[in-house]
Amino acid sequence: MRVLLITGREIGYARNEVLLRALQRFAQVDVIAATTEPRSLFWNSLLMTVRTLPKVVRGGYDLIVVGFYGHFIQALISRLTSTPILFDAFVSSYDTLCFDRQLFAPDSLPGRAAFWLDRTTTHAASHVLLDTPRHVDYFVQTFDLPVEKVSALPVGCQEYIFQPRAGPTQNASCTQVLYYSTYLPLHGVETVIRAADQLRQEAICLRLIGNGPEFMAARQLATELQLDNITFAPPVSLPTIAAEIAAADICLGGHFGSSEKAGRVVPGKIYQMLAMARPVIAAASPANCDLLT
Image (cartoon, rainbow, N blue to C red; front, side, top):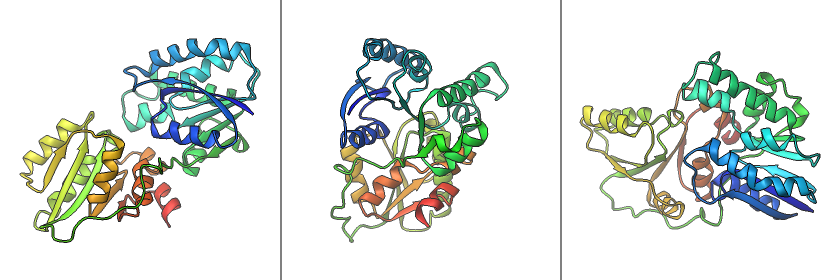
């Protein structure tokens, strides 16, 4: 079986790599993907589409898989081929932009465009993948998708990186708590910092790794609360993240944001931490409860 996998993000992005490894178990897979994390998903998607066109038009594939972020790619190539398309929508652009990050009002022109993009691309696919059953329900109800056309594929993780290993030493002066993120509203870093404030009298040290839109606000909040039990660290590679997980006494899985999307997703970091057999504190969200209880 010959499969063409096209992604708007780099193949090293966890969702895309896990999907590729799954496909390679039963098929010969050709890959067209970004080589690094793109600055613009829109323009990079157009570039990926142009690179893909000769292969799509020429045909010869039994299946085309459009990985993350593939909405713009799917919108274009679905009109150019009769080959079955498996579309890994993963999450909703409309929900992310309008409700989670609140960049646009739902009834604004960009909001309506995001809704159209989600609905059009999923309806044009032969089958759609999402990350959780809660997201399946959301897409079926919001975009009027037939339930039999959608399946949940858990995020998972790169198990060759995230494996059980020796834990932290027991002579540390405090309990080491780890949280890493890209500081999106979804991640709820403010909640984590306020929890550290509540526990300032306890022998707990919180390590926050990452960078992103809410990083400066998080630093400012920690300063205002005069917290000396928090350390901030820059983003690190996945192998280093695995070492950080192994060194922590407790790992925070999240997501701790208050949006409805936070309740529909299971963070990839939860799979990473569980794969390493580390203690995890996860938000009591519907999707997390579906997985963990």
